[in-house]
Length: 116
Image (cartoon, rainbow, N blue to C red):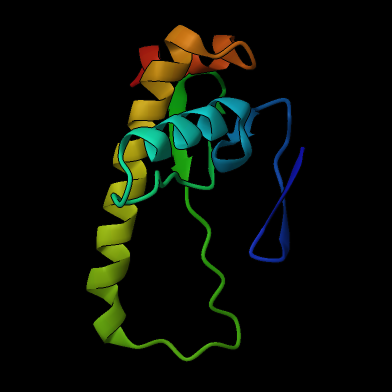
């Protein structure tokens, strides 16, 4: 399977990986829409780029950042860490709600919630 993030194609062997692009998933979009309606003025839902299982035994949260050709500033590290914490926290919430509500990939969401 191939996912495109940060203008790069990422290839994962389907024999070992079961992944979804969380921010493009139907359940994620539904929760995002409901959250905006309830929490006007609050922050948007943030998720990691990919989430899934490897060999159906381990759960992986994958966040992709492309810094090729960009100057990096060490002062941004705290900001990046804070953003990653929010993305992992919101991704956990989506997995748990997805295991109960999502029609698409419900089996994967349930498996992820068990492995967590």
